[in-house]
Image 1 (cartoon, one colour):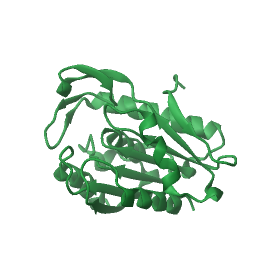
Image 2 (cartoon, one colour):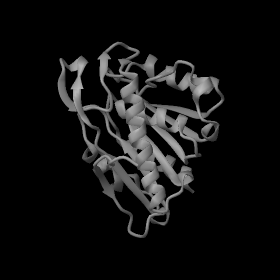
Image 3 (tube, one colour):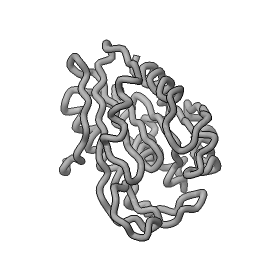
Image 4 (cartoon, one colour):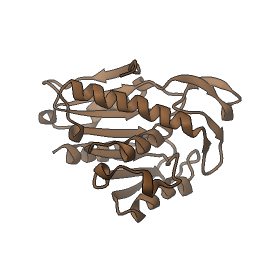
Length: 222
């Protein structure tokens, strides 16, 4: 296993029996979502460890080459993002290392949920859909799928039945609904167990969405 990404960790009050790996968006860091954890109101009996990794720092083409935390380079801010696909695959491998690290701590794959926001959601999509062992679920927040080409032939059979929850803001001016819908429709057409919910918000997280995320995680781990 390679060197693990630095992460913010929120441990449960009792020994963890499940984990949520939550990926932030471009320019943010793992600390950004830590304050949400208590507002999810998860039952203490679930004993969930939250892992918030920090993306590598790299130059981002669409931001004039400015270096920032970014899971991959974004080449063009078109509705359907043009990205460095190898960077996305590399980022997915970093998350796979975190999944394996949770396994070594006694958390089986079927007790691990992946959550991704915005750019982090594209990495979460790719990781969950291609991971060779069954995961507990995937939650895609205000995001898109970075690589859709030939996806029907590349996804893992192990995760064809996992629950996938998609959340999107009706006033989102960063991620086009067309891009978010493309990811949803792609998986719907492949008969994934996927659902879509829209919120009255922009490119952000709202209170009602946080409540739903808590319910989704609980449902995936119960």
